[in-house]
Length: 342
Image (cartoon, rainbow, N blue to C red):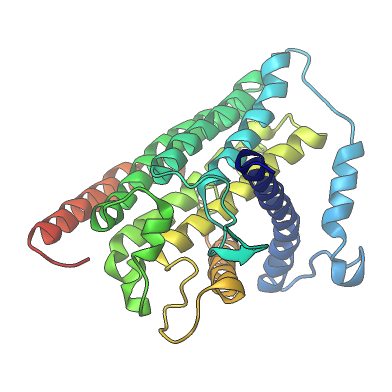
């Protein structure tokens, strides 16, 4: 087998494994989130379908698959059908450059669950995730529903506001590492856990976490889907599998945000304790534990915090986060010029 064919087979295998893993995690996350929220709110979650309710995601999928497809009479047909496709495509394209564990050796070949290891991986993620808002705006506009339109406009304004803070939170890390490559950012955090960017750049981590929560429209930033004032926001008129695609894109983005936070701020697959190995299976264990903790925090916030008012949402993004993260970038640059090792 020629080297080119071997490389094509390897990339195909990695694509299948990554996408299958994300689809599985999407189903598992819907179940875990409902059970954890039920526990926090002293009520029962899904517990009828299968042992402990573990088959509930499968039942939901079957229900959505066979549910009637509805479309408003005055909707723009092509955009109405295309919006969910744009949302899910942007969500899956963004994971192409993210590593999902450490390198490992199998069949005499070094593998890593990463579809493409780009030297400008961070810039690629920022560019692709910016396209995701088009799916939400088109979903709101094409339905010819005023509540859906307001949800789409809220989503575009919110993402534009908080993407600036999100991108600026990465600048200090990139300056300290000297690379846009995600694997370089992970390797820069080897050693004791105090080498993690969480402790080197705590302000950047705080801004990233807040801005990422707004980017994936999670409580307290779920204004585009505000049930109390917009019925369900941009996806009010969607049903069946088109609604499922929109929800899938939201959860894939949530998982990607947690994975990216693990790599950028929590040392990736490194244990943070010298002597504890971080290669092979153990590297996957450390990586998975960190991602699981972050996903639990997102669920915890949903079960704890109230929703912001829209004016509070915009004020906080423009008047608080952007000035804070800009000062953090200037401080980081000053420390690096002064010879500090970050």
